[in-house]
Image (tube, rainbow, N blue to C red; front, top):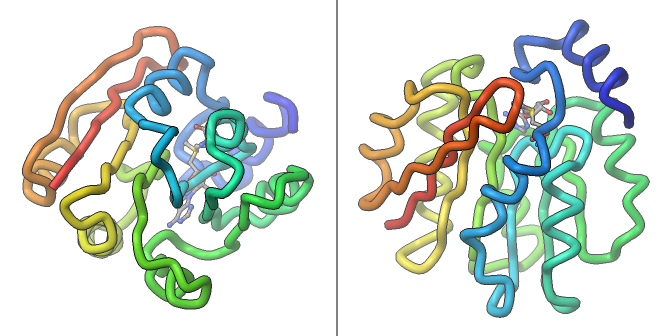
Length: 183
Ligand SMILES: C[S@@+](CC[C@H](N)C(=O)[O-])C[C@H]1O[C@@H](n2cnc3c(N)ncnc32)[C@H](O)[C@@H]1O
């Protein structure tokens, strides 16, 4: 899907999408760099959109690993289904329902959650549910990686996770903060 098609989805569903363009290669790099790919068995992606981060994850993930990608936009899900890779499962449902899908797929441990969810556009109660579930499934060994265009979500993240490291890239439209959170 082109940048123009992404923008057209933004015009239709801007509130849920929360961005006018896919992430830049600089932001994608900052999102995947904290991941130790050698030891990865399961990564969950929240809000893959057109798959900019998804493709980079798949490029680096080991052959015997799995990627569960949660996306609520039907057009984006249809495009993501075109990715020809047996390691990815596209889940056309909200991130807050993660536990149901882990159970269905017999997955006991999630190593990383990589999230592009536009927290500023999502009701507080849903953001709280998403973070509570994320903390639970990641346990003491997993890592939650999230980008946002402001520091507004920082307090929520710090209330949820013991350690939150902040990174920043000006090379994105708009510039973005990357939060790397661990229990
Ligand atoms: C800012 S876009 C990010 C797209 C892509 N990951 C990127 O970085 O270019 C956010 C995406 O989150 C999706 N989204 C919003 N709320 C969601 C939810 N509750 N569960 C899953 N996906 C959601 C939107 O449909 C949109 O595709």
